[in-house]
Image (cartoon, rainbow, N blue to C red; front, side):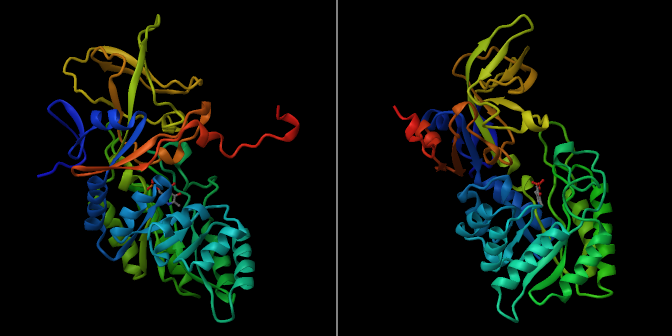
Length: 423
Ligand SMILES: Cc1ncc(COP(=O)(O)O)c(C=O)c1O
């Protein structure tokens, strides 16, 4: 029987049936490692809760590696994309165009044209200005009798207390979505336009949500608005967004059956197609960032463990004050000294954790930053000229490199030196 996900076996941390220290030795560190079986399990849990009728459109931004997208395609998922690049990567991975929705506040004319050309399920419109752009592009591209399906993103103006300010999107001052009153007017305009078909509404109120209340409020507002619109135009589809939180430390994640009950009780009675856009829930716990201790720096305030992974590799702690638990690959039983854990990047914010209890770590020890499968590698950059890490996909006993480690030539390849500076 093969094991699933990240667990200790004989005091060593494994991904499925593969020991992480072996992967670290074979491929170097920092190294992203994902468990395919855990991703499939997350999909199954969500499907079991919501039922097969709800289209799961994976929020590709959480992890856009082609192999991860292929895994989603194989399981019949759609995608929520927020750029032309994500749209192309989703299509290349085999995700069906008619299961792709395109969100985001700033789609360019080229991106709108790409969406129309590929006949995706719907463009989720975020402003009146964007509707005008889509009308113009669609009129130019489409022959008479054809139209582009669009949905309107509601900003339900609910506070999501439990989430970080930088990942909450459904409150009044957020740049995302539109108030209900504005959507009523735009929906009417769109319904009259020959090249546009308004098919419904969308909403996404934030990420890493752990409470059901804001979701309940948002779903009610979505359903109310759909009811109003049905007085003058059809509403065939409700896209209720993503945002399901996961456990990073001691959070109580949203209870899936409670979440499914909200969908069933508030949205399903409208008898529309239903779409959800989870990102973090599907891949967050299915990835770790493996790192090695460069050395332990002693300071008057206590020891600092300096890792070879930095904020350029995993930005969430620096960006959102996010906490990723750190586990030693060789399990220790006697963790009693407190360490701060930092990366090598020249920024004070390049600190992963403070005051973690450990047993005398030393140079070369491997550590795993847990729950790094979502918004990890996709947010990585090359600050300090640090190459983007490699990525490994593990599936049972198998493992494969799904992204090679960059080198310095990869980083400088696109640079050009003007003649007048060349030696
Ligand atoms: C429109 C939209 N849908 C879905 C998501 C996915 O969110 P999560 O990864 O929290 O499920 C996001 C993330 O920011 C988003 O902006």
